[in-house]
Picture 1 (cartoon, rainbow, N blue to C red):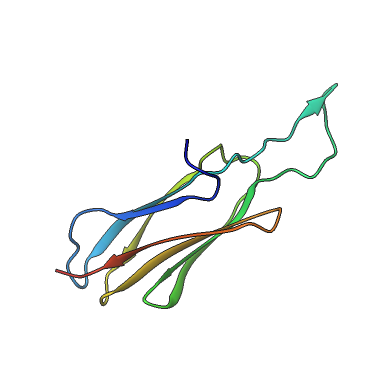
Picture 2: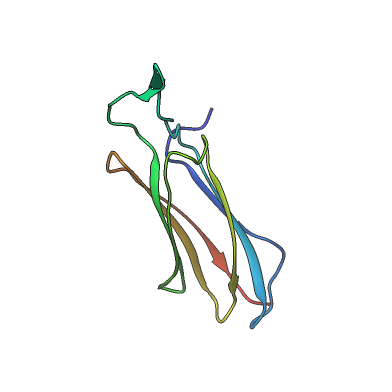
Length: 109
């Protein structure tokens, strides 16, 4: 099993400059779900991913705010325009202060 916080990022195919590329990021993370007792949420400090930031060539291009509704080992897919060679970086943040990053180099064809 992979350790918590491992991030894998990939871009589909070999995108050309000016094209829209599809990317996917996977995070190994337990993403605790809210427990319930007698129909009411159990009050405790749950650990889950609450924010995802995507940057490309040094600029933030997307940000997602999430909740306990996403499952264990979340995977996010998104599209972006390939403008230049650069690093596509995805950073996940969790409610316990965890920061997990993964990146891939994008080299337009």
